[in-house]
Length: 124
Image (cartoon, rainbow, N blue to C red; front, side, top):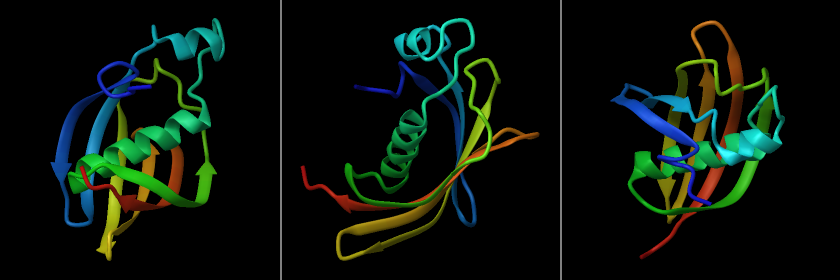
């Protein structure tokens, strides 16, 4: 399933000293939210992980395959009506075709999730 430009949209992308910061908004009308949960939509954890992977791939400009997900912490519920959500992709390390990074989701008031990803770079 394609998430970018359907389930979520990138409103801004900024290079920082530590990596990249993305500003996103989520599509409250997406089919996922109709099922999870009608009237009280929340973003499934697996979707948060996929968005993190998508943004890491965008940051390193390469298609990626997950090798390992560590230290995943879901700190708050991500609702599509929260407005802008910031996602920081930091501490990016690339070594022998493997990419490691830390990804965190938050609003100005609320930490949402953080994770460490290890991925393999895919050759097109």
